[in-house]
Image 1 (spheres, rainbow, N blue to C red):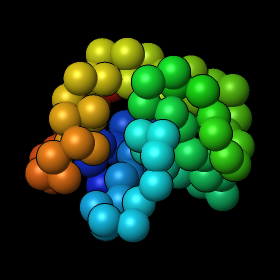
Image 2 (image 1 turned 45 degrees about the vertical axis):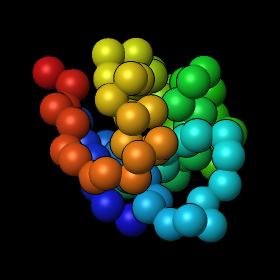
Image 3 (image 1 turned 30 degrees about the vertical axis):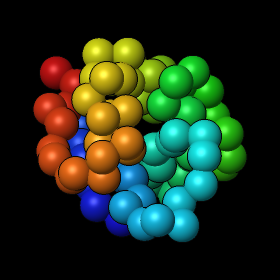
Length: 84
């Protein structure tokens, strides 16, 4: 699973396989935690993250939502800047 961004100890990953299912989502890993997060809503679909880590992921997603959706739709991998 390629890493598309990394900030504050949080890894943002996305699958690039035809078998990947909807809704469009990212995987956020933070230490022992893993959350599957909807790209469109920013809500956790599966798993869990500490609330502070989730807020950082949601902030990053709000900034880069269009880029992340483009990666999902085209499956053209690229790195996206971290949250500063």
